[in-house]
Image 1 (cartoon, helix red, strand yellow):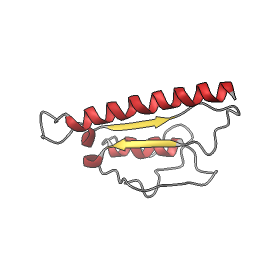
Image 2 (tube, one colour; image 1 turned 30 degrees about the vertical axis):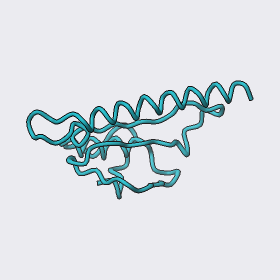
Image 3 (cartoon, helix red, strand yellow; image 1 turned 60 degrees about the vertical axis):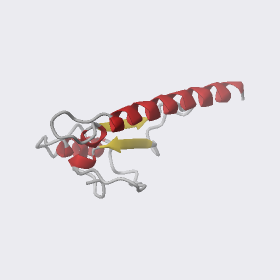
Image 4 (tube, helix red, strand yellow; image 1 turned 120 degrees about the vertical axis):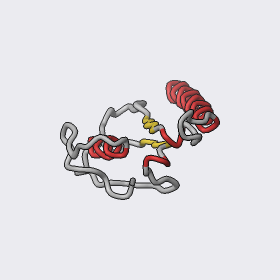
Length: 113
């Protein structure tokens, strides 16, 4: 129980810092467009704290990118056969990089853009 408490406090520390970072991005205008920096920035956050160190059911948080076509305010769950590299393909495409492959990807994710 002691180690779980320490990891929980560490996760809380990381989440608080992420919230502060996102708030600062949201409050800072983009010098060219006047949009917030958060609207034109993609922030991908995931926790690696795991006793099992498996790479399935991996919780990820994606923030920002509203002006890049990223849809928010919903939960997406993909099957075990969908590689995480598909997320990277989707994010690369949202940033204007013409690609349909990254590592072991099978294509972009549906429902994110």
